[in-house]
Image (cartoon, rainbow over all chains, first blue to last red; front, side):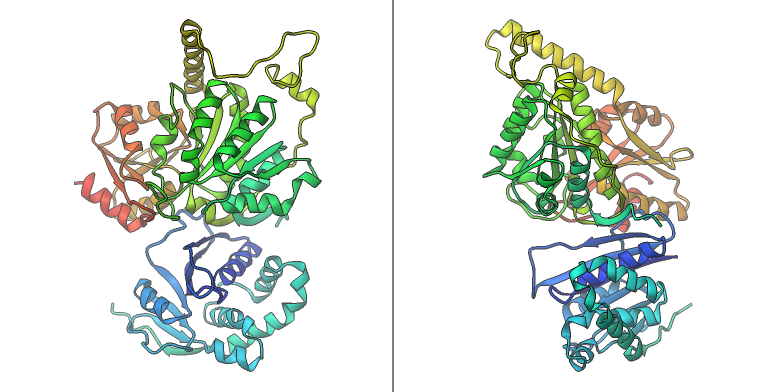
Length: 187
Length: 360
């Protein structure tokens, strides 16, 4: 198993922390993992992205050409990364603020209305967990109990009371993820 | 699954490894992309546990001179910075080489010249291995390519520095500093007692004892004949380091028609490119220098007869390529591929360069 994943969005959306939870979850399953951020001067409001690799084998390069999965949380990220998804790969996006949709037909496109759902849950901070739920539903690369363990590892102990609400958000994401385009692969 | 495995950044691994090695003092000044080193040390507050001093100095120049002071007392002293900050430290490094003081300096390189960018680079290769400060000196230089090696090379760096009474450097970049990977941190080692330091470092200026004269630590020697003798002693020491401490890794070189030479983050990217090349039937291997000085010249010379070409891949305009060319002495063509100013090459880019420049 080798999954090369990019998560991209605005700083402050939880891009880096979602990546960290994924990486930790991978460790819980005894996988090899790497987490490499495009670190920049931007903080909240700027753009942020992180490459997470989860693999059965030792990971060679933390920098890759193309991705199995792209999770894009704003328009600039969608524009930038849709061309870097491998044919037959997965692109997951949050519909909020997206007006130019995905052009490619050779990738599987999923929509998770995470922003809307997080508002319904009256907790916009769980936005990234709803997205993560969507990912786990369509690409069961990791078991949810290991993701919860990963989450526990990433959260400082004083925040552990938030674990149940995060789990709820992940489950909500699994429920609301919808397929928007099934990849047509030219053989 | 052991609890001993952690997920952390390369920078954080350096900080934890320093505490666990029993380092006596860290002196630094924050700069991206290595600020997590001092941040982690401050958060861990080792002055409460091991007694290690962690100090944010007023500048990089102050920090390297604090390292000088600590090292003169035989203490495990270290500093870290990124390229512009390491330029500022060069005077202190030259003085420490001249005074034969062991210490560890970490350079998490970013794109230059000048203040440049904060993104990864390997453009301080020349500065590090050819002597960024003045005078005929050498810096023992370790180039980690993973978070694990970031942790491991703290101890190795100090071991080598103290073995040869010479400054050592971990030369890494923003990729390895900022990325997170699994790491097994070294075990805790208590800090040495003053008595242990006196035994390990009879030269240390810890106060005169009745059984010997005063120790003097200085790089100054106004009598040229004596200064030449000092230099000859340094050179003899450097030849010893070159004979004993060369470290490198060979990957898939056995059947290789071509060899890529790369260190640190570039070596990781090349590994992926090599997998891709081999899928296309191009037999290529990797030689990864782990010590940049002493440089693994001998193994490169040995491969010069066996392969049709070598490519160095560096995050710079072509620096290590000169040492590779010197090593093979014209026996095989050596080309360079690099990206500049903070751009990290992709495996695709490396493969394309390999085909363009070497596999013709």
